[in-house]
Length: 376
Image (cartoon, rainbow, N blue to C red; front, top):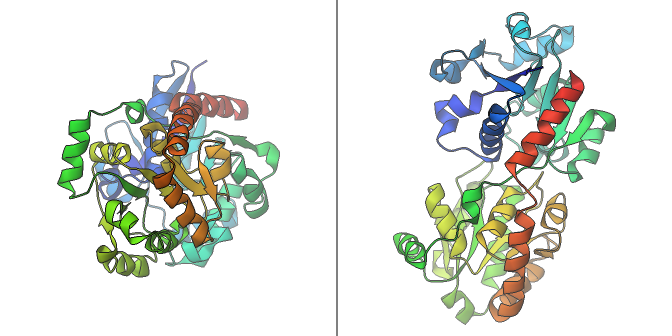
């Protein structure tokens, strides 16, 4: 029997999000394309009001705009979201991939939970209406019939902070596209490097500028490297400005003389070339629900320095150099070793390539499809 899956397309059609997808957007796009290829599923696109509704394709179901007060009323009174009565006959299950979790009275809802940051570290989340949005988030996810976690490390936090019983949680690790594994020719890498005025070989970080990404400590660790190392190896930070990033932006702008380059926006094709031209990928994040940038670096053949916390040891396995993200000296020592010990760095490159093959969007989609069938 064909399973009709209501699928949240909001991020994919909203003009404000679709041209610069973050991790959740990439997940939404890649998972959707794989589920749509499954002959046993029929994906029914759904969007939540506003700009996304105006940009949606014919055949898309559009929920009316649902501001926080409407969502709170639905949760308090146990009523379904506006439009839910019309959607339910069209689908067998609803998959919320982007934290927009509607309450549907007649249809099971499955919600993907990427992390527990709004509840575990509220200082790292958007401060606008933080308390009310966190209340809505906790309760809307709590009403979901099933939850998808993107790593095993997140399960305990989801149980504790979202109050979801473990038996209602499935783990569906993220994947990576085949294009990340394609080795680019040296001339193309050189052209991209020249476009951004970079010297051959550099330390690379990729991620949205926000406190949990630990960028200040990366810059501090880099500053502790010997001057001759910094003269030969720049530190390249690639990332758009996120919440509470004012201090980070000021730091990056003031560190150019040190050898730090900040590239705010880089097209995907250039980004893959930058990965392949790096001497090391430095990602000692303080918190990750999965850590997709680590897997992208693995696939690109860049040796990786990452953290001993949250999901990162699980995702990296034995393919990366793991450091305490609060220990600046440890980060600096790992960066120095990447320069000094080419045999070790090359071993990490090889291990990383193999590790990246563990994660595929096809596998993520297969696990997701199985979880959806189980709750219908």
